[in-house]
Length: 133
Image (cartoon, rainbow, N blue to C red):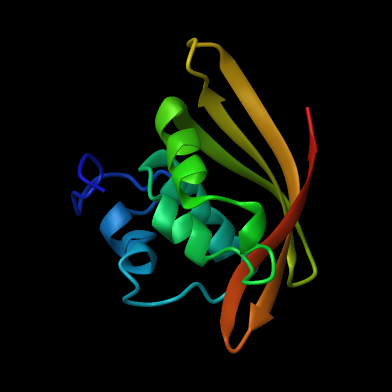
């Protein structure tokens, strides 16, 4: 979290708040997201930083075996994550979003996803996503 760990820096999740008052407390485990959208935003910020440990910890325990912390860290590192746009929330546990980034070759990309989240023992987790371009 070295290059973004400045209290006054705009949060990568595009909430309009500073990182120190937005996603940083989640990344440091000082508090936990209270909604699926908050978790979605904090996970986007974790890709932007990158913070693979947070990404794996916020993945549903039943789904963690499908992901590797190092792979998540690398995916965050090789791309420049530029903007998060929340398209729509569906009920309490689904979030549709566009994640804008520049890939390793410098090409602009948009990752569109509808993500499913679950709440277990008062904590939200990412379960799966449906992707499209």
